[in-house]
Length: 431
Figure 1 (spheres, helix red, strand yellow):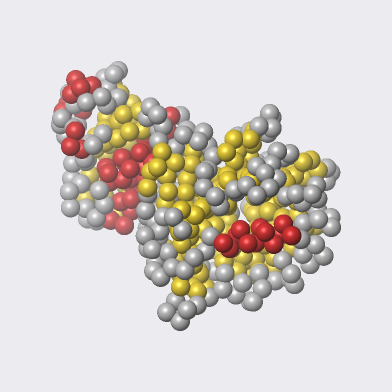
Figure 2 (tube, one colour):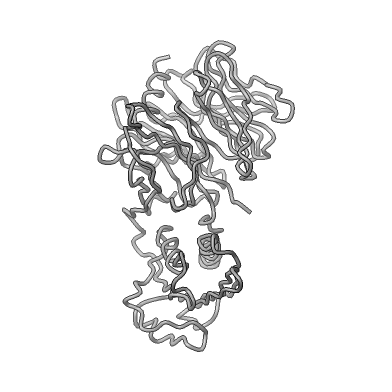
């Protein structure tokens, strides 16, 4: 079980002592070579609000890597309605698109009316209304960002989604406090889902976005819990002797794949969440771990060392037929299937003694492309629109979250202002 020991070491090595609780920040480290210039003009009625809604939209578009928002100081005007737009001015500063809008407040209810214009064609592309209260200004900005992103790219935006991650803080008594945290996709509005004196691992989202599952050591050994986010209601699903780890919801949300060692070596099991009935999927003396469902729910990808080193396999649940998917590299683990099913992202080590990176394998051609460039990259999770991937890494001696676009052209870090974070999980679309 040497590689399992190495994996556990990799899993915990990114945790360092931390002292405080702070939301994540965005540090863009690489963007596309030719992002689309766009101007998000400050919205009328936006002064004095707790959130600068137009700036949040601009920041979201910048973070996608596909757009280059114009600096406000370079704008030649501040139009708030169509008749105020002078297209020659926006062409002069190189902007291809312009977003204008108006914020109104009626008895604590806020309304954003905004429009998107094509500078070259001199026409309106989008006109929308978004409504919310004073606590939902960032939600309104994320919704507008999603709509603008989809209008310009044809891809649904994921700015309104959430992320889970685990933080470890050092206490004054020299012990550690673990927190399961939830935040917006941009790292803002961090909230605590669970606090514990014992480690928390492998948080994962149910497809409906209303429930999560994770591993907690609060009973002195790993146990799998499901957790309803709105009520905080928790249910312990497993607490068997040995490993209880790596929960993964099926696409329909009715089943949970997991790793249990109650039958000997670690194997993949499926639990029917209504009845709690367990079905053993794999049965091998090798270590089988880290299940992840195929998009149609008919198969499971998992990591196994039965070929001599950790590699990715897929099992068909109808007939138990297994297929090895990865052959290149000394270590391939924790696979996540892309939205279109064309490939998988995974933790990859090209040769023994090499660094752990996040890589993308094309399932048709079998080719592998490295997406990350640090030494201890782990825990990849893919945005629900398939455009970006979040993972845990270590930079300048600190454990942080980092993101990279699936094409590898855009990168940004989300370090905590204080503390160390890991084990990210990106939510589904939260409709």
